[in-house]
Length: 365
Image (cartoon, rainbow, N blue to C red; front, side, top):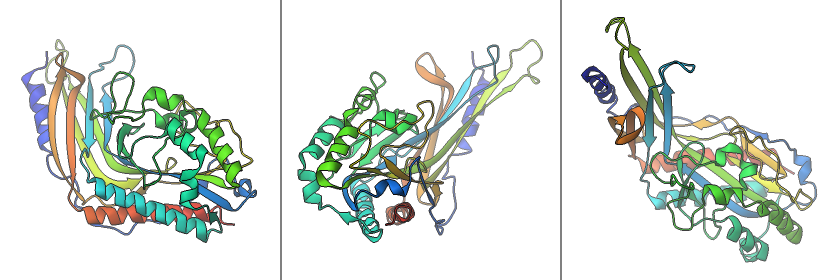
């Protein structure tokens, strides 16, 4: 049974972090750098035409940190978990950022020497429509990935569609900390959204993309950007000295969170499926969240970009786990609110623009 001292320690930890945890001012963003993922620009020699079929911005809405005390079978396994969430964001703001990402992508591909197939020709293509039917999701789908909950946003008329899970590594496996993915079946709360099962069954998509590339004599291009939320940490302590050798000791937990806009490396990428490419899926490690490779040639952001921490306000709460409150023994919740949407938009667009420029520079013809 948890003592009053344990509860007091929990509440003190929460109250100590019940204010916005950052005072950083807007900053000049570092230059973006990019790298190939198991491929090279020579793989694009077949044609200079590109057909953009997918532009998806994943706005992360939660992230968590978990800590268990001790190691080994006989160690104390009481745990603490901290969840940082941004559950509410203006869809119009997200749509504007996605639209600008699309515009920047087209401009940078053109500057890199590619001819872009007209959008109307892409969306009217029967194979594109089959791809969307197989793997597409509604716009503003709430789902998840290895980081946590996320909203998937695309610029119309393009529809968000996800890669076959085997090409996305473990990053595509959804986690949820705010209830956007069902516990049974891992299904999105958005009607018509994906599930853990559906993303494992879209193995036809790579072959369909090659088929479309051949028909248009153009590389099928997909862009994916992961806008991160920040970080959450948790810690566990047990005091054995103050309670004497006969006592099992008393436990306490602490949680902290930092809300910070950023752009995630490795998963932020531009993928090219080529007319002479492999119609089967690409091989990526399935034991960790490694760089995705959902194309024959893939360029990715490396490393991640981090931006301002003064764009958010934050509130916090805490509670103890138990029979009627499953989960970690010590649970901390931080809810962020975006306080400067204009600055947030400018910073995210600058990050995506820098990433696009760096990635397309690697495939310049």
